[in-house]
Image 1: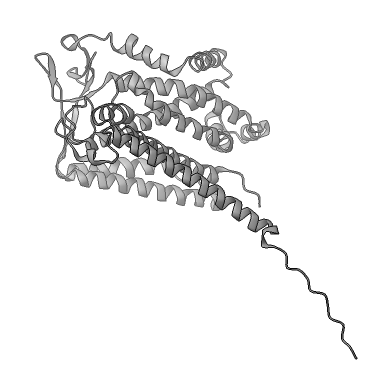
Image 2: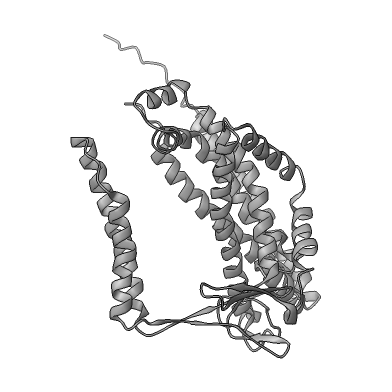
Length: 399
């Protein structure tokens, strides 16, 4: 009995598999992009060497030879270019942090005011928003700096800001705002530790009070307890450590002030412009977020006897934050990126110091520009990560 042999089946080529094709195509694309980047970098490095332009970061530890008029960290003309980088970075973070805080507060206030039943308040908020958000930010910065701050009187004719008992507390002139400078003693660390402990205890008590209210409905005095922790504990530590904090008041000597701390008019102009400009956009975001909350929510809150302020704080704003947070993140990122306009008013930020003065002296354009771009990228990514974490917490979740 003969057995009929089955015909051989031809094996399909692996290239007909979509996954294999996709892997090959992506590998070819990545390889091509890598080769192009390598060739571009090699060509740029060859041209830089031919023109005696630095191709590394050897300049980082060399003496800078120039002064910076405003620093948060120790710096002098004998410091290095690396020190100048850190000065510019801290100055950028300072103006960004200050602008984010005050722009958020002002934006929320104006956004709520735009929905006010008071005709005058609503119209004033609308005029502010429609006026400032339609004027370029650069023009606003130049206005605040050249038209408002620079015409202030000179040092000898400074405007005096009196203190509690009539004695001069601070001075305002065309060189800036001269404030008393705090001097910290060796025991101040205990005061700072007590403040941190107070914040932690307040947060723990707030969590416990919220849980107790959910279970029993009883409200706890979170505000008073938090005030006792945050203010009372540091005060006890402050006096127990022998009051390790004094104020160095400014004194006019000759043509300048001795002592005190100076706030540059350039810093004020930059922060003022960023705050007032960005707050207009935040106000519109807040207004739209509040209007997105169903009318029935406010009606239910009023039916429960809640006033306007408790209703906004406990009912409307928490729900509106789900709509507000994503576009608010964009405005925070815009503040960080718009702070690079500091060069137009003379504020020594990262771009002005590192991508300006250091670049002109060393000539290492590629390294400095790439490092500056990387810094702003990292700051923006960290800001976005924090806001995304907050957004994930506030967003609606389906059960």
